[in-house]
Image (cartoon, rainbow, N blue to C red; front, side, top):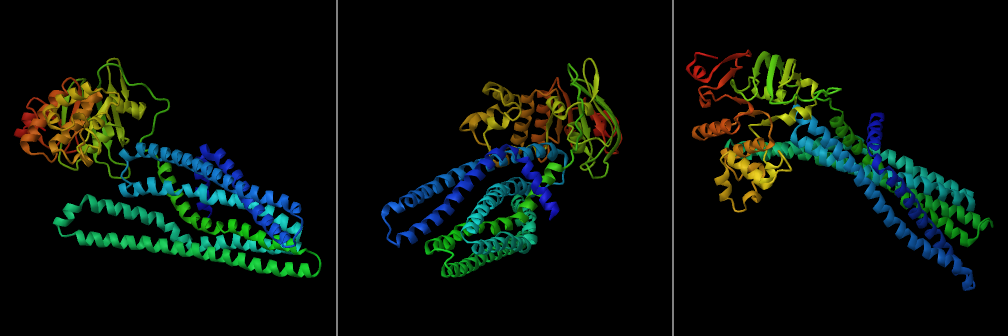
Length: 569
């Protein structure tokens, strides 16, 4: 429980931008709840006093008070809702920005977070934390203030009734929430992870639906999804049962308190200690207070789930950087850039080292092919060159006209501003052609977009599209062929103006004639830039191109013609 409270306190501290508005919402909530208590008490007095048929002028103050309390209650409640939700949304904005900023830094260099689980953390867990402010902190603060005020009023009118109210409020505000937490705690703590597992499995099934159907494994996959869904619904049902138990205890406390108050009040009236009119106030006043206190048990039932969500969000925020940013950072060298790799050993964090003592250099404007079978570490090398992950050992240097700088001493964003990456599975968003290109350079005009598409031989394809640059490419570029998707990704690199370009398996999943044409166009359009082409298709490389074979985890250089003939690397 202490760990859960620490997580919640950290989340509360992260929501500083909404703190002032939340305090304002508490003040408005106190006024709204106070108006409700005044309305109940004054109405009870007015009805009881009117039954005695006094002159109407004796009732005018009470009549005005009832009207004022009734109007004020609605106005204050509406204002409190506006302010509290505004505060909540501002806090959610802070949390979303913090999570996205963190994920942006972590995701390229980590494989620990699945897409479905990450989606649940970012959407479900972060959005769920809105309840912490609106449904937990706000009602608790308002109840504490208004409950104390109502209790003081009851003690002033009839001390015995004040004792009864104190006992019933203690049961409703302490015992009932404690039962809710105890009954739903374990189930609630498992809801968020179960929801993340369900999302992860669902995305896996959807992404692999065709393969699962062809292989006859769809039924088994759906059965597994149903099992996870059953676990999730079971946890949610147990959590709801705990909420219901706490609410039931709070209702019983209110009812028992009402009966006890009537009993002590009747004895006080019989003893001449209390008037009949005041008895009506003493009996009805606790009802409005218990209406407010009744929110605490459902709020308490949310705490375990909120604590679990806060832990999952904090796990993302607390995940260590895969790349340490230098302090202070140095600037990228001036002039055309080359690369120098010295005794480089590399691998993904937490995984075995894939390559050892790799040494090579690429002069400014030179094109180098890095070849090797799948799994040898070519894509890991690309991630290291982009500073998504740290090398295990060795150095990667950016070589400029005037000096060479270790990339580890340059800020990661600065490295990626001059080193571009065209991945084999480059993501295309479900948006327009223009929007997908402007990811590389948001300020690019239409003429620049057309020039980039023309450079990668997509101008005729664009002319066939019904809306040109404003045509939608579909989810993951599904309306494009494999070659068109790769060329569109290459057009991004052309548009980015990166001086060093790392192209990872550009011909993957393409037919031979399409792959050969794409490779030739790629090398032509990137002529003059420093290019590293990572591929296992040696047969597609120009004969004069320099080749680095890393299949033996050692630097072996040769020429493409010798590689194909078996004489070189």
